[in-house]
Length: 318
Image (cartoon, rainbow, N blue to C red; front, side, top):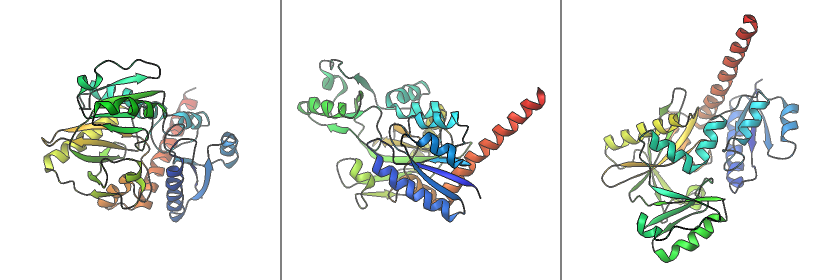
């Protein structure tokens, strides 16, 4: 029986969400006939992986030490196949400022803004230069952790101070008014899943709106022209490929009233909770949650087999 280790929990601000994702994934894998062991990020994780000897690892972590390439690096050292993007793509995706630089180099529209490091003096007339409202967010957090919309200049200093409680660097960027849309990307080669319009029951799609049932509506398809939806799907695949992502990702957008999609960020390990978006998108095209998780594991296992074949060929060549 194929054994899958699900790494969940972790030490980030998103630990509780990760535990929910991990349980959902573990249950799905059990239903598909896999042997499953659930592991947390503790001092014994290295030894746990050595002792359990899984055939594949599903990383059900969110935030730092999970999405940023750290766990991926450990799994590379142990030569364990794992679901999701590799070390570099994971690190780039987690660093919003760096990802946005790469998006711009690939002519992928993304909001303009500046990166501020802890201790750096805030530029004078920042609100005037970028215009109000502004979005202030932690540079390397997910799930809208450490994010605020600044509508009045008097709110800016407090928003910056709050964001710095979550990260050593923050982004201050222009606010894109319009429709909140997300597009999942699945497969190798990657294909866009159906786009989803997110209608939060609050000012914006914050942590509560993401994970509290009933706090947002997911509309498939979005209430947008078909041409605009197609552009967003094409941009999602381009964003995924520009960072070198694999298996799956989720790309978040704001679409202006004029129909212009702006990429806000990419999530290289999308959530798999009961309110998560990628499972909804997969379901809309006939892929059940259990089948989705199974497909992801099979992608990782097929990579491992391919590596094994290459290694065998290299041995024969010697």
